[in-house]
Image 1 (cartoon, rainbow, N blue to C red):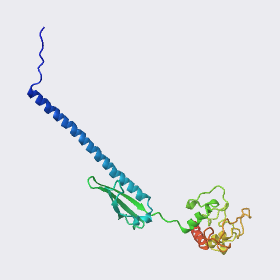
Image 2: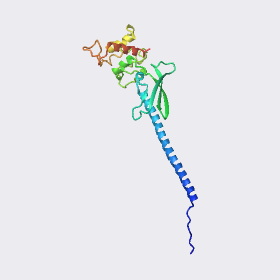
Image 3: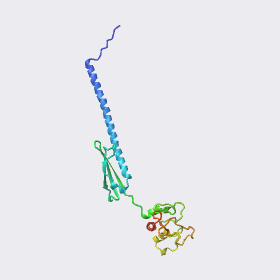
Image 4: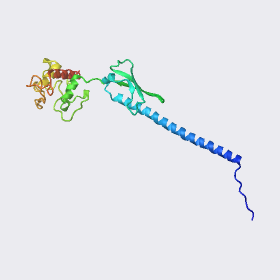
Length: 245
């Protein structure tokens, strides 16, 4: 029986194999390290965007009047204190910054660079003093005022408060008043608040009104925290007059 003799790699072949293995190892290690670095960088970039979104959301939720009192730059709290933010205000079209402005937010990192976002914020118009009175005393419970966004509640105890100057077959120009010539429209509103039954009713007193609130000058002791002041009555009348052209 003939024996087969196994001959190992020669020294030269072993050297070549070791070089190949080394090169493959270096390539795999470089891929692993490079991938890890890219993952870390991607994670840090995501943190950059995340902080930018958070700061933008914070500025959207801030009352417009409080924007000028904000700190406009600094570091984020730990553990994100390596990131910085910078806020700047710019004019928006022809508006004054008390009315509207462009807000630019920049988040920076010393190694990752920066990201910037912009938004437009505007001041919400304040409610008319008369509307504040209307809401404070829940006038919409008994009165509809569709022109101002207060629909018919379904069980009206009083007349609609818009277009009362318009006379039609279904509704007199001034409910509960037979002679509108002896008093101005604003005074008509004021007198109606003070004494809802003070005018002769066109409706034959079928809907007798009674005030559900106390009014300054008509009750003692007067409590301005819960009762309607004379100024509030005037503000309410002025506001209601604007819906009755």
